[in-house]
Image 1 (cartoon, helix red, strand yellow):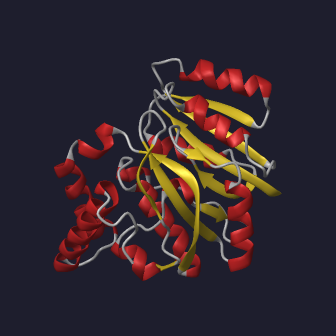
Image 2 (tube, one colour):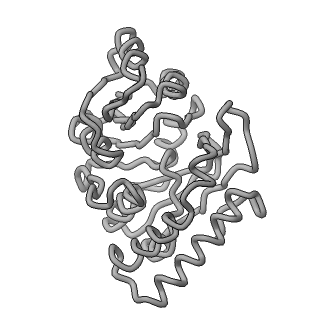
Amino acid sequence: MQENLVSIITPCYNGSKYIGETIKSVLAQTYKEWEMIIVDDGSKDNSVDIIEEFAQKDNRIKLIKQPNGGSANARNNGIRNAEGRYIALLDADDLWDNNFLEEQLKFMKEKNVVLVYGSYRRIDENSNEILRPLIAREKSTLKDMQRMCYIGCLTGLYDSKKFGKVYLKEELKSIRDDYAYWLDIMQFEKVAYGNQKVLASYRVLVNSVTGKKAKLIKAQYNFYRNYLKLGFFRSVYNTIYWGCSGLFKFFGVLGRVIK
């Protein structure tokens, strides 16, 4: 483990449209001690060619190629190969502001915790800002997180020095696996803190917002009922709460995370 190194884990499947922009946002970081492990998950487009071009110019960018196994499997492959003390998850279509790592590491030291997250704006397919930024909940307890995930995946930063690496649950088939990942980390200290500064951009794709709503609702309920082992009524309540929060977040009714 390298003491000051941040390991950025990026799964990529057919991400050629955005992966270059994502890599550039990492290259622009004011904090320079990082490695970006990009795990190509059996892409059929030219994602690998784009990644290799960047990797040839900067040895902090590392490409791992694997057969398609899903995002949880790809992330775990990256985490296994990570050499850094700090672990961050950044998807192949999301972006960081150039001071993201600097600010989050500073924030983590101020709060003296192993897990922090942050606020982020929403952007469309053309990287134009839409809706209002989602401002992070200042503090989330384990009990809060059992109600819904308050951590924007692209903003989470985990210090693995004290408790070691944590891996995603591949049995969840890449549905709510990031939620389970943050919950597993929160078992250690029962709390995480959210940075109020907007430091990242989450790309809202049309298919991710409008497609397969029934499947998502069922998956969320099953997560509460089967993974968290909550009772029937609590699982239903949490699913409704999650659904209402989603309406606020993605249609801009409030433009903030419900507190």
